[in-house]
Image (cartoon, rainbow, N blue to C red):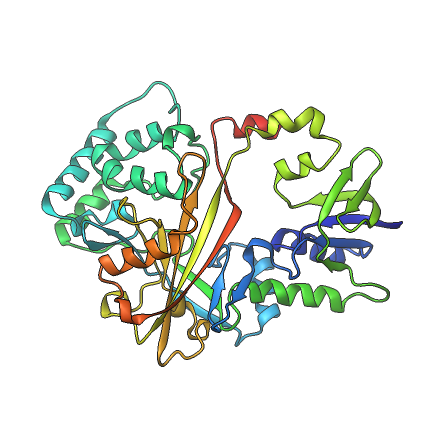
Length: 407
């Protein structure tokens, strides 16, 4: 039986980052187990049969941490990154509105703009003795009826695959631009776009290999640091059982390992189900909710239309579109397609849960049809589609999540 000081489950960014920090602190007796045949987890990238590159998870990299930024610079080198100023948009009412939506109401039809402003003014004038009961109430209190009904409610319903009333509101942090009524009024008066808000208004993307190239490089660097013996990152090693009392792990192919400390990056409910903790914690895990994600890549002939030129990603709150977000993926890097002079690509994301089921067999075709209906692409442009479902897409800030995590 193999024994290690620190056993890490999962070779995604968190698991690899833990290994990197352990090495930096002089702790070299660690081992990473990864179920998939490649490192990267939900941040890996895939090159399909046609040579197009697609990301599975987060596609926009930014941080407030010098330590992290220096490592990224080192992993891909000074020429390995492309820098982008964010151009994100909301497609609603058959037009593009710059993101953040609530700061750019002047782009809406007159009636919708008036409803948005009126709702914001009513929300600003109201006072409340108690905190919101849920995310839905927080939306209504913060933005008023206009912005809530046109964008905030339908978009969040799609991205989280459930009603906002089923979610807590305390996760907001700096992820949502709060309304500044005077600023919004001035934007309307001047017909001025206001796009500078947010921590990701400037981001970078790997020149080649998609987001997954970052984590492949880190995994390679960690393996190169192995001084002797077997690699410390073992791929294709699926977990079967964790005995937390005996500090022992069994893999699907029968390997047994013991550890002093275990770091797990797999979903908490799956960890509990595969361990001796199941008897005591399985019921609690029912309060840990998540959505699944369908990633649909659309490889295209020709060049992007002028309406999409320069745009990074677009939000789609309306129900006529199955996706909540579409990324102009070849804009992130021309090397995401085999021939950037004659090809380009869009990548759509669709959320799924028990509250919002998705027909996996139809979602790719529905995505292409919706893009055509909006006028972004036409049928002769479609080279192919690529589709992958991620069972665990996003953890949901559900109403009972914090209580479950406390347990």
